[in-house]
Length: 200
Image (cartoon, rainbow, N blue to C red; front, side, top):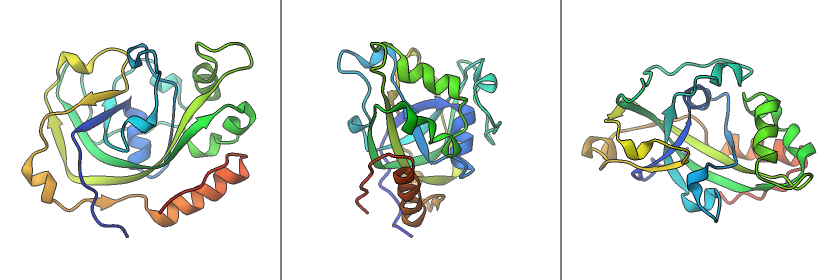
């Protein structure tokens, strides 16, 4: 078991159902293409190596996942945001082989059509790609509610959060995934044709 992570005031926007799946230990990877607010350089997990999972509402998300998970504390439109899970990136990279991406299906809850849309988005035919991150995840002892701010809206992946409450910096957090799970996941990814080397 690793020591408690150093919390940083960065949020990564993801569907609330996916955040719940990560918190339940069902999903330990994130596949992302990025939003229009990512700029010319596009999306990259290299921008931040640790973040709070920032749950977002998407009216079609229940139709876009193969399994349904619900957060204990649910966000509402333009209402306070519940932050419960903190993640560190154990490994990240770009996948350009669709066959390898397809083989990752057991490791996430998205439907294939969703991942295919992300893979092909804004790319030349046959030149698609998607960003993959392998996570280590911790759960806060209590939900950290932050007020909604208009800067959180739009097609962006990363958001700046308010100052982290002092009690969170000293609170014990429960580790959901750790070194052993990451090592097992690296083996699974290798079997899927993804070349992953993980520094522990």
